[in-house]
Image (cartoon, rainbow, N blue to C red; front, side):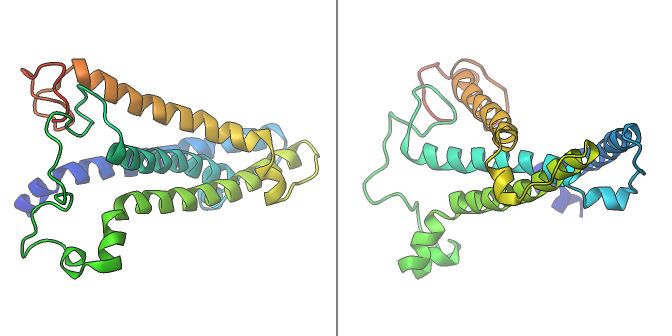
Length: 218
């Protein structure tokens, strides 16, 4: 068990943080929404009802949407573009040999590599495809949750409800998306550029401490 925890420590800690922060988001969001309901003279929601509300769904998936969009775009862009000196870029100095994009094929290589054909072509792009699929799912849930949250806000002030299609066309929906998208690409751009000049000993996201600034890749 200790060996398993050691070998999976990075994922365990990161997903552990995710669970803790999601629970705290739910608790603080629940309190915040009940404060709004109380101010409007409406009855408070129980925690279970809040988790199914537009307020929670919208807040959760508008963030997931931007994260998956950023990661999918980053995976795809790094396949074609380079940044001289960045630890986040493919090496420029040593381009791969023609036909070497798969790497060395061994008996332990994933099944699609041995199978070839359309299965291999799909597997070659599976990481970006998975992120974009998660993005589309999160985008849809953000839209549905956002519509419910918007209509709940409308009801507090006696305004008419809107449809999902109508909410998709509002500036509110796109404001929510853009405020997250821009911050995600700012963070990615920052690590791309900062990793040219700065180092973190022991991290695979950093070049070696003694590596020259112009060296591209890890």
